[in-house]
Length: 149
Image 1 (spheres, rainbow, N blue to C red):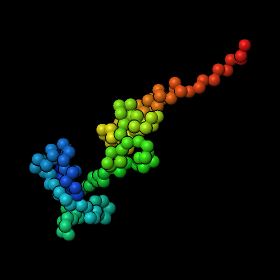
Image 2: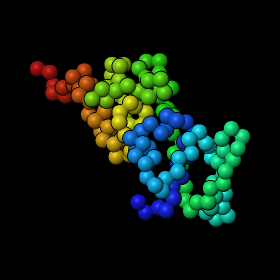
Image 3: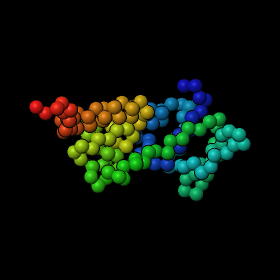
Image 4: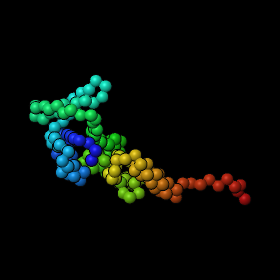
């Protein structure tokens, strides 16, 4: 609403299938560059221009700022053999942040849970810790320090 012109550079069409992207496509100040990728960021002390390209052709876009989202690759390799992950490698969790491996809990951007935000990850981490505590507590052996009779 405040920018005179917004350029959305989407290398893959899948990036344009979100509700936000669909809404943006209808705004008069938004130009979508489907199938393009950023080739170069130009500027002496700040971003002044983006060079984008598709199929060997390039374009220059004059800009005042750039916001870059390169996507997310989950660091789940250490558990992929023992817990279920989706095709992109995100760990499947239930409402308690439990994985398909008993006793293994996961939280944050590495999971299939909604939202890639710090506060969501913090809350999920707390839930995962409480869930692990609830699972482990009955299994703990409690030492009784009282002398035997």
